[in-house]
Image 1 (tube, helix red, strand yellow):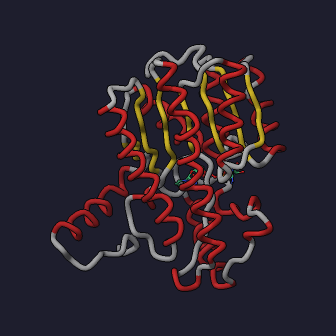
Image 2 (cartoon, protein in one colour; image 1 turned 120 degrees about the horizontal axis):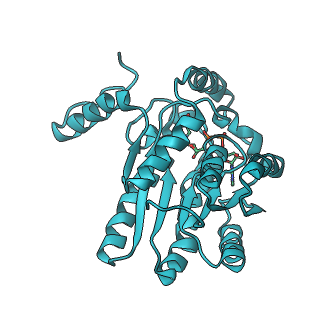
Image 3 (cartoon, rainbow, N blue to C red; image 1 turned 30 degrees about the vertical axis):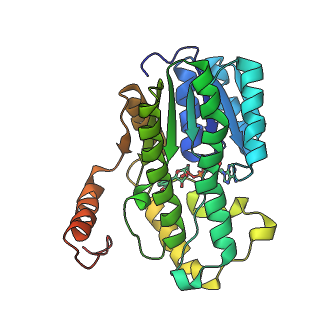
Length: 278
Ligand SMILES: NC(=O)c1ccc[n+]([C@@H]2O[C@H](COP(=O)([O-])OP(=O)(O)OC[C@H]3O[C@@H](n4cnc5c(N)ncnc54)[C@H](O)[C@@H]3O)[C@@H](O)[C@H]2O)c1
């Protein structure tokens, strides 16, 4: 999708990190912007950052793990703007720790947001985009954790592998249906955003996590702080990918060596190599 002016972008997780930077870029492109998140204060701050671009916006609180809330965003988007062209299923959270230490609540929360959040976005928006008939684009935020098996990240990796494979299936299905909707899957490595403090948005009823998760969470915090690319860089690379209709958007090329090793491990039926191995 090359010409973005006056088109409508919908962004989940727009209160922070990649979502906020994508909202700013969309406004700079002259798009109308729908911003959603569970964090209302953060959403308001993002909306304020869009003021210099005079972008028309719609700001809605929405928990992507709840299908009915995402559906309400779709209804409101079409009521206000009559269309949606660019959907960023971006909201995400992270949990850490060896698999045997994870709690059922870790699984329920992480899969609810990272995996079902994308399912809900696709189910609410893609049928409307198909009816609309315009050129549209769905960008699902996965991670390099969707292409690798990262130790102490089983819950997160499962959610992100799910996002990668769902995006691939969606692409094949839309192509078979000769739809004018393109798909991309965004796979960044560590970037300094709010992701290491994702628990700030964890619902009380799913709060139970393992005490053993703390050192792994600290590792993620340090790793994201060391990230060389910023959230702004990731948003820019993503928008370039959308304009070029690129399906896989891999923002950190160095990680491709580990992905290649994993592919060879599978094809040659070798024991898996840890992506942490130097
Ligand atoms: N930062 C990284 O290192 C990194 C790397 C790869 C992938 N990602 C992915 O990028 C996406 C964006 O994360 P980020 O790094 O910008 O982190 P972030 O914490 O800065 O932003 C995530 C946003 O999602 C929102 N959110 C959390 N739960 C939600 C829910 N149930 N419903 C709606 N919104 C919710 C948060 O309030 C927050 O505003 C996530 O999907 C994350 O998994 C991040």
